[in-house]
Length: 496
Image (cartoon, rainbow, N blue to C red):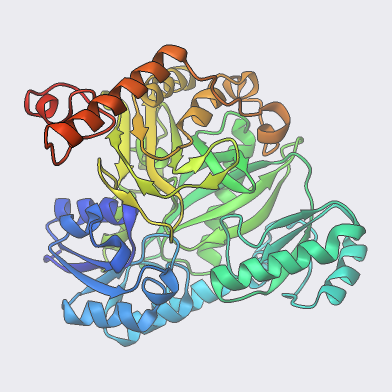
């Protein structure tokens, strides 16, 4: 393939990830950014960058016209949408195509089919995938919704037709709380996706959330890259993902992957995608949704298969065949990913502010995807995830052990993060045994805030006192309050 100019229509760690793949392939990476992201790492690492608007995503990353103009200004040959933002927006994919630019993803028609969750259910029912009972159409009226809810039976799940990631999703236990939760879900979906339509599904108690990674080219080749277990969730948002699933039997795994490949082939899917399933205690599985994009948790699949999904995406988008066949793909070892978020792990509240320290683990079997650095100001406008730490081991036990070490070697100060939450999860008996469901957090696991260490508190007080002394009496202009030694220590190579 001749070198191409590829615009990454996203931000943060996924933009950095795609930029790296572009460079390795000899392509020219281009970036966009909002005014709040001017100093983000993805901007510095791209060859060119174009501002697309103010901080809030509705004024920048979500404005299709701004992104297309940026691509045209930088003479982009292709656009990679990353995940989130416009990645599953059919209007965006169509606008990219109309501008004569290659969209690194499926066609707009397929995104329309699968991006609309109600239409996706209908499509998958036609190709034979089992569905959880639910509403046939999207709903905006709570009274109409209540009629369907009574027919389906409580408890039920309310979900956003146009989105995912836990937004616009509510569990309704009984009729008395339906109206309030429907209204809240409608409002949240409207703000997050610009589309408030909702649909209802019967609630499957304590399921496993399993997804199958797919990739297909324009020559009729469709392959699966096995599955990921995504059942460690908090408020319907994934926290930890791993591959292979410790729950699935070999027989269920084969049936799941075969069904996913068959469905993707039947709908004419091209590029990377993921079909998500709910699996019950009897290993019965039900179609949940399809993500027509790269997933946040793609590193665990790359670990166990050795296949670079982003590079394959780019090759497929430009008409090349997959570089492998199904029989070539093997799953080796075990991988686990931890989503590192700037949030209060006790209250689950996002945090914003300056990172005083940003030190990540390294070594054999450890991977960090991030866009943050020491001194980085975390904006208030975007998702709270600031990094992904993933590990690989020869087996699940080694991966868990390596994950514990890597998390303990990760130091992030200045804002609260969920690193302590991950450490505690890796000590949970059910997680370690692989015997967990989506109910793990909240039923079998409860985060325990750390008890302040008296000696550590004294050291922090001393550090602040020394910093203040240097600032006020020594004229130091840039003393780091998290370091006892400030600039002198940095110049002499001492660890912060």
